[in-house]
Length: 402
Ligand code: PLP
Image (cartoon, rainbow, N blue to C red):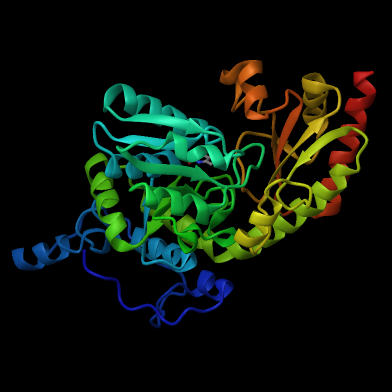
C-alpha cells in the first residue's frame, strides 16, 4: 500500500473533525459523492498504477473508492493514527480483523462481557475455521493471563463493556497481550474515537460499529477499523475478498457525521454523567452502573483513559426487578425503547429480555446483569428533559409495582 499525503500537524479534535487531515482545495465545501463502482483508464499502465494503490485508489469500489477514502482519512485523523477502513457493518469490521489475524489452530482470549455478536463470531469460527477461544471476566484482570496459551494470537476487549460498563485497563491488556505474543484488538464502539484512543494505550487495532456514535443518528449501518497501515494490510485484503464495503452514499453520511462527533459525544457524555448522578439518589433505583461515578470500580482507570467524559451509556437496576424495569421502559415518553446506542436520541433497552436473553437467569447473574437492569444510551437532548422523563417513568413504575 502506498502512503496517503503527509497530514498537517496535529490540530485540536474539533478542528480535525470539521476539516479532516489534509488542506481542502478550492471547490465544493463538502466531499462530492462519487456514484460509480468502477473507474476507467487511458492505458493499462495507468490502470495498474491505480490498482496498486489498494484502498487509496479509485479502481473498483471493493478495492477502494474516493468517497470512502475521504471518510476513512477523516476517521484516521480523529483516531490520531495512520489509516482506517470502512465496512458495511460493525460485525463486518470485527470479522475482518479476526479473519486477518487468525488461522486454524490459533487461540483467542475475549471478555465474557463482550458484545454478543462477537461471541457468535468466535463460536462460528471455532466450529468452521478451527480457532479456539476462552472467555475471561472483565472484572477480574488478575485471572486473564491464565487463559493465554502458546497459540494465543489475539486478545479482544471492549471498554467500557455493554451493558454493565466494566472498565478494562487498556495499557495493562496491551502489555499482557504483547508479552504473550498476541495482538490486542479493542472494540471502542461505546467510547467512540473522541472518548478514548486505545491505540495510544498500546492496542494494535481498533474497531467500531459506526452504526453507533460515529454515524450518530440511528439511520445507517456501518463499521470501521483503524490503526497503523501495516496492521491494516491484512484487514484490507479480507475486505476485498469478502466484499463488505459500504455504499458511497453511506460513507458520505458517515463523513458528515464525523464533523459533529466531538460536539455530540461531549454533550451526551455530560448528560450521561448528570443523569447517572441523579439516578443514584432516586428511591426507585437500586444500583447505577456508570464509570463516571466515583464509586464505580473502574472509575480511576476510566478517568485516565477517557479524557472527554465517560461515554453515553449507563445502566441502572430498578427496584422491583424485571417487572418494574419493564414498566419503567414502557412509561418513557421521550426516551425510546430500542436496542442501539450512541445516537442523538436517547434509547433504553432491557438486557435481560434482549441482548442477554440467551444467557438465562444464572448466566446473567454470573455476568452481573440484574433482571431489573435498564440500559440507557443518552442522546443530546436537554439533560433536564431526560431527567423529567426518567423520574416520571420510575415513579409510575414504582406505583404500578405495589
Ligand atoms: N460492537 C458493539 C459494542 C456493539 O454494541 C455492536 C452492535 O450493537 C456491534 C459491535 C455490532 O455492530 P453492527 O450492528 O453495526 O454490526
